[in-house]
Length: 129
Image (cartoon, rainbow, N blue to C red; front, top):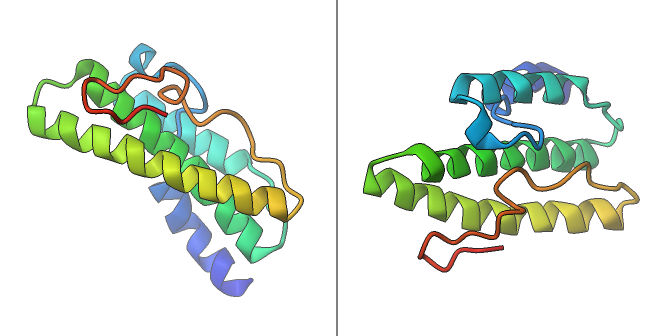
C-alpha cells in the first residue's frame, strides 16, 4: 500500500488525459487533460491494489481513446492519425480486459469507454469497436 501511495501522484499525472465521456472534439487537448485529472483525483480507492490498478488504468485508457479520437477528428499528419487508430484499437482491447477483471472481482466499471468508443468509426483502417 505504501508503494501505491507513493506512486499515486505520478499515476495521476500520467492519467490526466481522461476526458470523462465529454465529446473530444468539443474541447481542446489541455481541457481534456484537466477534466481527466479532476476525474482521476475524485475516484475512490478500494484498498485492493489489483482492483485499484485496474480501475485507474481503465480510466487512463479511456483518456487515451478520447485523445486519439481528437487526433483523428482534428489532426492533419497521416503518421499521427495512423498512430491514433492503433492506439484506439489497442486501448479498447485492454479496457475490455480491465472490465473483465473488475467484473470477476465484484466491481462495476465506471462509465463508457470514452467519447471515441461510441462512434464506431474506423476511419478506413478497420479498427472499429
